[in-house]
Length: 312
Ligand code: MRU
Image (tube, rainbow, N blue to C red; front, side):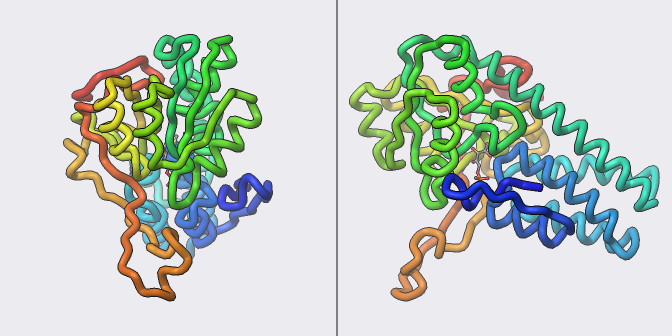
């Protein structure tokens, strides 16, 4: 069962996913989203696929469809590839079901532990009276446990650091306005939502003095893909001498991707930008992610500590 993130914060509706087609649909429409959670959803998807596929070759075709459901977050394709390696030892779909289910449970536990460690390693980054800016949603809804960037923020506050938060609404699907606000309200951290375009204004006004965001894929050289608008925030942080951190599990680092130029960016339906587009037929384009060059990134807060690229 997944909490349908497209309906939050208005409705808390749980969806029961029982087959590959439903899984791909909820991944693509962002009912389930966030890089670490996509990896977990992928393994559960493999379990149902092994259960329902006609035979092993049918299973492989469907597994590939799950793998390619969203291209930018490495966690989905990486987890599927890792699981498919296990098929080298057996093609028996009953055995594979057992393997996938137990791996999904194990990953779930692991993600929770990783979230906590990321938050603990991020604690020294935040100081009392900091106002930290974050973008998109990187909390409990995007992973298991506390989250990544939002996890660092929530943990620091729970440890008595008197911090406040600015968060962007995150156009066009409003992961900030709908999801980050939902999570921040639950823990009562003093927080203020701003439009994406106001980031520069508040940095110039010295209302923001740190940035922590998540990641969908980190190249070996440190270039990082994250929600569209992250690159703009990083350049503005640099211009205003504000430290800019990425918080992510090391599983988001993709050593096979040497630099950000090789990261495949998801382009989504332009009608997400504006429901009137179809009617007035204005040309529009909707990239869901952008790549921040590593030179703008102060450090990577991971479950292994604060790291600097290049990664190996
Ligand atoms: O399109 P989304 O909502 O899946 O994008 C999510 C992000 O960009 C997050 O910042 C990223 O996945 C990290 S989640 C811990």
